Image (tube, rainbow over all chains, first blue to last red; front, side, top):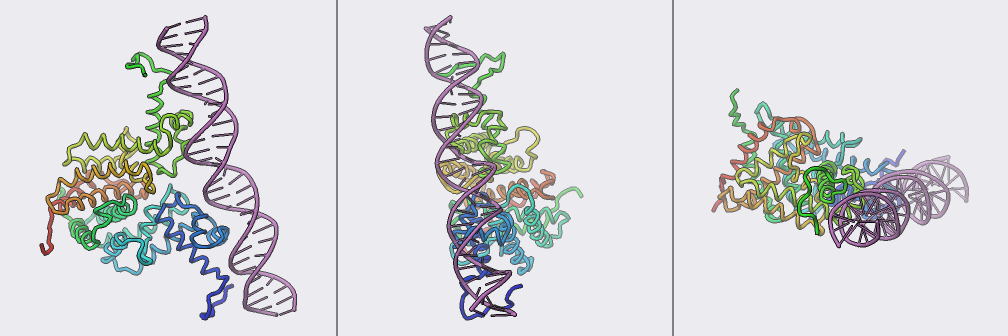
Length: 198
Length: 198
DNA sequence: CCCGGATGTAAGCAGCTGCTTACAACGGTA
DNA sequence: TACCGTTGTAAGCAGCTGCTTACATCCGGG
C-alpha cells in the first residue's frame, strides 16, 4: 500500500501525505479566516502551494476537506483535555491571537464554517455533542446538558466577537482577564441555584 | 417627487415602496437563514416575487441591501427598548421560533451575515457598539464595557447555537427556562466580584 | 534497465454569481 | 388624448465556482 516508514534523512519531492497535510493546514486557516462559503478551493490549493486537482484526489470534495479539518483538530483537543480543563482550554485558544504559533483553531473553524445541514454537518454536530457531554459532567443540576449548551454558546459567541466583529475591548483584552471573568461567572451556571418550585 | 399619500382603498399594482419592502423582508429572512454569502440575489428577488434587476435599482448592490436590512431592524429595536430590558428582549427574540409571527431577527441577521470587513461592515459595527454601550451602563464595574461585550457574545452564541447547530436541548428549550438561567448567571457578571488586587 | 503505480500538472467543463443593459408596460398629468 | 417619468421585465455580460479530464513526471521493485 504505502511505504511503512519514510527515510528520515531527506524531504521527498513527491510526498502525498505531506501534500495532504499542507492542504489540511491551508484549509484550516482559510476556513477560520473567511468561513466555508467564503473560501475557494483555488485559494486553498494556492496557500498550500499545491495543484487544486489534488484537493479532490485526496478529499473528494470541498465539503470532505472541511469535515476532515474539523474532525481532526476538534476531536484531538477534546480527547487530550480533561473535562474540567476543557472549557478554559477552548476559551484560551479562542482568545489567543491566531497569528502567533500554530494554535488550535478547530472551534473557530467550527463556528465560521458550518453551513446548512447536509452530509458533513453530522460530523460537526457530533463534535459539538461530544464537547457538550464533556461539559455537562461539570454540573450536578438536572438540566446540566442545557447548561453545557449555554456554556458552549458563550464560547462560540466569544470567538465570533473576536474573529468577526474584532473590536475592542474584547478583541484586545488580556486573555487572563477575560478568562477570570468568564470562568467566575460560569461557576454560577454550574452550581445551580435551581430556584424553581420543584 | 413622490405621491405624498397613497389612496388607501386599493393596493397598487405598481408600488415601488411596497416592492422595496418586500425585497427588504425577503433579504432579512434569507440572510438569517443562509447567511450573506449563502444567499443569492436571485433567491431574494424570487422570494420577494420581484424581478432581480429591481434589487439593484433600489439598493445599488447586494451589500447595500444587507446594510439597510440590518440598520433598519437593529436600530429600531435598540431605540425602542430601555437598556435594562434590552438584553432580555434580544435574548427572547433569539429564542423565539422564527416561524411564528414577524419577530425581529436583526441580531440573527447580524451574526450570520457579517463577512470580512469592507464598506458596509462599519454600519454593522456601529450597531454592535450601540448595543454594547447600552449594556455597559448596567454594570458599575470599571471594565463594564468588556463585560457588556461578553454579554453580547453570549447573546450571539446562543443565537448561533439555535439557528446553526439547531440541536436539543437549546434548540427546543423553554425560552423562560433559558432566560432564567442566563439572566441569573449574568447578574453575577454585572455585579462585579472584582477580586483582583486593586 | 524498464515498467507501472503514485504523484503532480494544465486545461477546461457546465453552472452559478453579482450586476447591467435595452426595452416594454403602466398610469398620473397636461 | 398624448406624453413621459416611474415601475417592471428579459436577456445577457464577464468572472468565478466546484469539479473533471487527459496528460506529464517521478521513482521503487521486478
